[in-house]
Image (cartoon, rainbow, N blue to C red):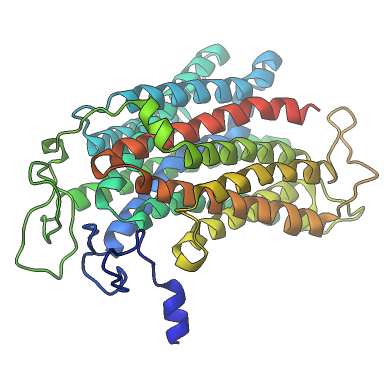
Length: 460
């Protein structure tokens, strides 16, 4: 039992100058001023991670409904999904880049709150339009949808900048990991629901398809709105907590205040705007964070090939059981990848195998992930022209799921989380929040470049 406890005990980020072997589990606050761990804070940041990714998952899950709305126009039906991706990528990347430059006197909690409010309004409108305004023209609804996609993408940018910056003020890398974990949770749940829907569905006629798609989309929109509302309530609860505990921070920041109760965790102030944020040049942050930034960029760039291949790989079984048929096989592939991603984001909590402060190794691992591309090409990729899989697929279904999807997802979660968790170790204390915003910018940049390159990979 003692060995098991020692395995999960977190090692200090820096070696003690006096040789003190105690860890943060043994001390209420270490020599670097790190406050004690708090599960409520961890869970709030995990919920913010869920809210960061859930809106996009809600839009993707509603694709059958959008196809139904655009069915009468073949040009719109063919182009609306690429348009969604383009608008989302441009809006998200532009907002993150602008916010990363607006550092002076920034209030990161306000940015998080604004993000959640935008999502609540946007998905509320999408839910209303799925029930009330059903007779508007296709072009009008397409324009409305693009505005909603742009709004939610800007909101995601505000959330990424605000949450990834604000979490650094807590001086606990576990909280950064909790945001990454929340994103993985948001990725796992939709394919589970989709598989359950497919496997539980009975044969229905075409006339029943329209209300079905509309009802499902309405449920997706309400769920996304509810997740954002719940996350907003949790954040406001956290911000309203009394500032207790003590830690040796700059007296002029107003971030923490003294308390006679040393057993309470240190929480940031409700009025975060009282802290003076200075502007840190992005070029300086790029220099200090060159290895973890390069690693996280490459990690998420190469990850974007996975949706392309997952949508095109089919079973090699000529007479597949229900869970391997095309309608369920694609969600199954998504589920296995996201399950691996979830496990990978949990692994950095085990200090013995965490590489959060080994950025050069993380960079090598991110480069090694490119080897998964030829593995995907060995799978049963469906031909876009013929609608059939390759007759000479080298990897059977089990190998595709266990040897390709699972480790590719796990490596994404592990390398990405380690990069984000360790970023604050390479900058000064007052640069930690801008560093978090910069890493978020690099992450989004990797996703954008990966999305572009995935078109060429998918058509190759």
